[in-house]
Every structure is written in C-alpha cells, then in structure tokens.
Amino acid sequence: MLKRDRDDFSKNVLTLMTGSALAQALPLAVSPILTRLYTPEDFGTFALFVAVTGIFSAVACGRYEAAVLLPASDEEALHLVALAGLLLTAVTLAVLLAVWLFAESVAFAVPLDGWLYWVPAALFFTGMFNLLSGYGNRRKRYGLMAQATVFKAVVLVMAQVGIGVLKSGAAGLIGGQIAAAAAGNFRLIGLVASQQEGWRRFSFSQMRRVGVRYRDFPKFQVPHTFLNTFASQMPVYAFGTFFAASVV
Image (cartoon, rainbow, N blue to C red; front, side):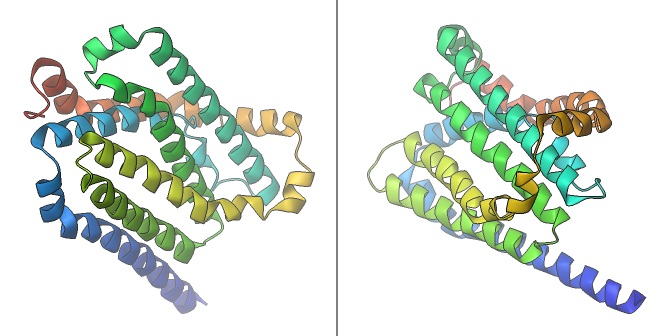
C-alpha cells in the first residue's frame, strides 16, 4: 500500500512538473520572436501590468483557495469555492470602481496609461485560475491541471505573437496575458460545474459557517501573502514610478 502511494505521489509530481516545464519553455522558445515584435517600452508596460495584477490576484480570494484542501467533505469544499468566488468578484468590482473613480490619481503612481482599465479583467481570470487549481488539487486531477497550464502557455504565445505582428504595442502582451488566463479557466471550470449534486445542497448559511471555520486563512495568510507579493514586485513599482517604461 505504501509503495503504491509513493508511486502515485511520484507520478503526480512528475505530471505537474512536466506541465510546468512545458508552460515555461513555450514563452522562452518564442522570446526571440517577441523581442522583434515589441519594444522595450512595451515589455516595461507589460511587466508593470503583471505586477499590479499579481499583487491583487494573490489575495483576492481571501486565501480560501488554499483552504479548499482541508474540509472532510466535498460539500464543504464547494461552499469554500463559492465563498472564494464571491470574494474574488467583490474585489474585482472594487478595483474596477477605484480605477474608474480615481484613474488619474492611480495613473500617477502606476503609469499604465489606458491599461489600468484592463487590470480588473486580468485580476478576475488569474484569481479564478488559482481557485480552480486549488480545487483541482483537492480532486487530484493533476493531469487536467497540467493540461490547463500548458494550454494557457499555448494561448499566451499564440496571442502575443499573433497580435504583435499587427504592431499593436503593449496590447499584444497584455491581451495575450488576459486571454491565456481566461483559457486556463475554460479548461478547469468543468471540475466545479460537474458537481451538480453538491450545488443542489448549497446554502448561504453553510457558506458562512465554513467561512468562519477557516477564517484564519484570510486573517493571517492575506496580510502575509500581500506583503510578500508586494515586496517581490517593489522594484517594478519603483522603476515604473521614477523611470521610463523602457527602464522597467
């Protein structure tokens, strides 16, 4: 029994590693093409866009996506998924409202020009991919998770190269990023949508109960994750604020 468990563990790790390796190799393989299609300023704007999106998407689900692994029953896990999805939607709408109301002030600190309005879309799709991946990890659908990761990379490089041929500037890089995140969700959404029996027993009171039961995740992990992500992206913010996009 222990040997079979070890074999399964090794197989699952290899599956995820293979998917991640392929997903990283594809953008690297086309990087010589991208550097001829886009300018340093385009890459700088794209780096700043990814940095801004990343800091919000890392905490937009209240870190409940990490708690999905813990409930003993799938029903409780689905309620956590629903709660995390509602939090993600609320954060996305809040960011959209902030961009709409304070676009000029935000643009002074984060010089993304008109791309600020695309941050909420990228935030939602990236946060949803994190959430669905957490649920896929619970269901041990490692093959599907690897496929989704590779599919994201394929869509990313195809979109960035395809749009870049049109000489569209940073639009190709940012548009490809958003399209890739959406495509990854398309591959994983069936994990949740197929749980019809669990959704029939859904109740908001149960969702509140599981939210309170695992409240330590938003209470402790959100500040930690936010500060950790912000610190890792600080050079991008600093260069983006005080220097031109080409320096970024």
